[in-house]
Length: 198
Image 1 (cartoon, rainbow, N blue to C red):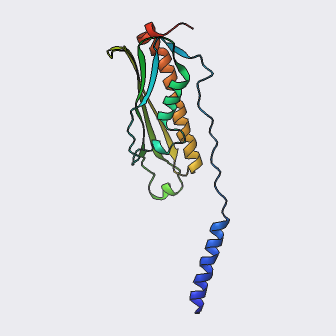
Image 2 (image 1 turned 90 degrees about the horizontal axis):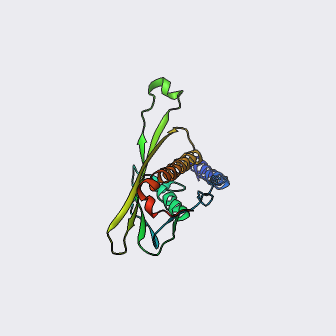
Image 3 (image 1 turned 45 degrees about the vertical axis):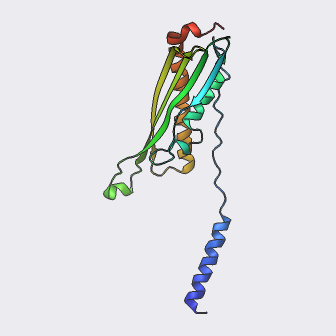
């Protein structure tokens, strides 16, 4: 066996050995987003249906499917934790209409300055849209309220995957808190006659 060939083979063995010695990256442990610490909102309906009507593509520039907790799942959890059926007629439908996050590339510093500058390389634009409606047992719409929420965050170009996932989780957390605040504000205004007193 020639010397160059022997050296190449030895280098390959070393590289394989190094690869097998790498430690797995420890993933962040994110808290569970729940709303059980808040009093339930009891509606004068016999049934509450939660519907995820989003149609995620899983294709760039959409990235919500990569999130540790996608916004649609957080919205569903809010509805399960906070909404209660306390009546004998009519029904409520909580519909998640939109829950998407789009990754937008940002302009980087060019030239020599770019070598020494850590820019914000991506922006994540998140949108969450939900509809809560009350319908009679026969089907006609009796009342409804909507919430349209938006949140954006940027990420530095040198952010690790763990740092990026932490920012993604923070986006979902912010959207969920905005959803809770908006529904607490608008439900008494538009659906007050169907909210039972505590």
